[in-house]
Structure formats: structure tokens, C-alpha cells
Image 1 (tube, rainbow, N blue to C red):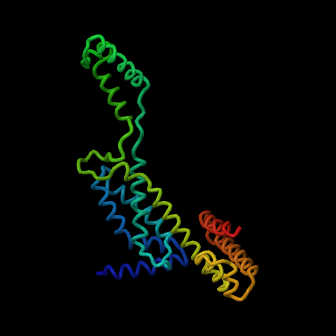
Image 2 (image 1 turned 180 degrees about the vertical axis):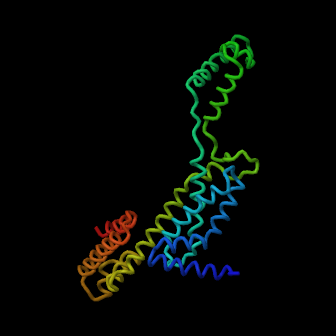
Length: 272
């Protein structure tokens, strides 16, 4: 029986291979090797909501595939740490999307408003809070219709973010848990951009890469970089522009991903 260590080693080897030459076959092997992550998270969430485990597991595979496609094994990050937010995020998005807003019929909306007016009128007339049957009698409707209208209006009201999304008494997943974490999404996007730029830098000629890293990553001035390398500041500027142009072309040709182009454009804007 394979040990956890050997599975991790095999997974990392496949991730490196997929990173260098992506293929559906490699991706499917990686999915099978890491399916335990999906099952673990699906089991945990299934105990906290009313959705079937099988549905959560299926949705979780989408997150796993996205993590495989975006992971850069050369950055030294553990794949499990990288993949868990993708898997859990897909499941929580699924749970949030399953919820539907309650559309209250116009008849019930009007009945609720009329009932409030009658309640206030009867309270003034009787000198006390009216009973339900008194309000219903004044409205000329049945008790059943009145209660359905009130329940519909109540269910339409916004819920607290601390409200659980399941009728189970031991549910711990709240509406707030299913909302996307904007801060985390921003952090995740920055990490992906960092990996993209690091990969693009590795394709540059050594001197050009050194100059770009010194200016953008180490915060050195172009004048200081020029003095260290024994060249003019204008040469440094030309090298930077040439390097960024090469990164832009390479990413456009090999990636075809708008987010990659945006990452390079952000760097190029800093040279303006």
C-alpha cells in the first residue's frame, strides 16, 4: 500500500510534468491522486447542510481541476494548501446558488399592507391590540390566506449572515460562510499573478532578468542598477522595456489568458 509520502512525491512529479506539458491524461491522473482532498471537504460540508454528499463531491472536482491548472510547482507551495480554497470555494458557491429568492404574489403584498392598516384602526377603536380573528374578519379573508401572506412576507425579509443554510439543528454553515471572501480572492489573484510573472521572468535573458528584478522586486533605482552593472541608465531603461515586451509576447502566445496579459500590463504601467 502506497504511503502518504510516496503519494505526495508522485503527485508533485505529475504536477511538474503537467506544468511543463499540460494534457488531459496527466490532469485526470492528478485528479485521481488528489480526490481525497475533495472527499474530505465534501464529507465535512455535507454534515453541515442538507445537500447530498455526492453533489458536493462532484462540484468539488471542478475546484480541484482549476487548482491543478493554476498551480505552479516551482514556487515551493504545497499543492494541498493551494487546492483546498478552490475546492471549498466551489462547494460554497454551489450552496449559495442553490438558494432562491422568495417572490411574494402582489395579492399577498397588498393584503399585508391592508392588514397593517386594519390592525392599527382596530387598536384605536378597541383600545387594545386586536386578536388575529378580528383582523381577518375586518379584511374579509380566510385565516389560512392571512397566515400564508404573513409567512411569505416574513420569509422575504433579509436573513442575518449568521443564519444557517440548513434546517438541521446542528448545521454550522451560515449564509456568511457562503459569501465570497473578497480579501482572500484578491490575495489569491495576487499570488497567481506573482507565479505568472516569475515564470515569465525565467524565460528572459539573464542580464535583462537581473535588471527587471533589481528595479521591480528589490526596489533599486535605475541609476543605482546602472552603476552596479557599469552601464548607462538609458541602457537599463531599454533593457526593462525590451524584457517587458518579450514577457508580454510570450504570455500572449503560450497562455492566451487575459489575466496573464493584465499582470504584465500592470508591470509595464510602472515604467511609464
